[in-house]
Image (tube, rainbow, N blue to C red; front, side):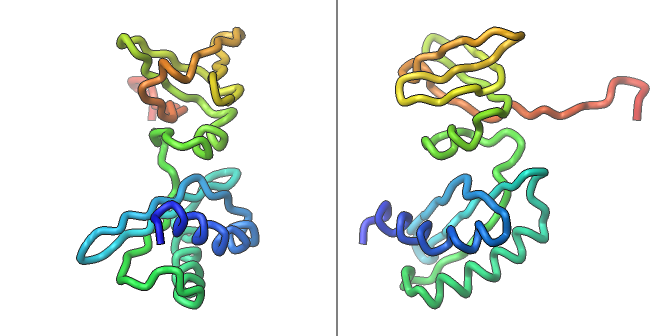
Length: 157
């Protein structure tokens, strides 16, 4: 079975469990390594994911995947949140990041940041200081979440 086909089947099996818990699949990564493979499942929900969400889902998904028999070899299952500065690689991740702050690195070394307003196959639309800026996808060399962390100022906290 091809890795992409396996990932699609795994996703189909786990989606109902995610929905039951109010969780969204951000990314699914299958790494067939020896001696053990790794299945990484990145999840999110409004308000963020807690450690308890990951623990509970890991147990449920492990049991579900064992029963489904989609993975015959030994593997480790990792369930986690996407992280504050997650790199965006797949179309699903870009769609998930819509409405969030992102930073894009462009061919030629330029950087742009803003709120990701729209994702299309040929372009991204960022909102920056009240303006909408279109960025051709062909010039985006890397993109990641731009963490909105309210760091304390000197003398505070």
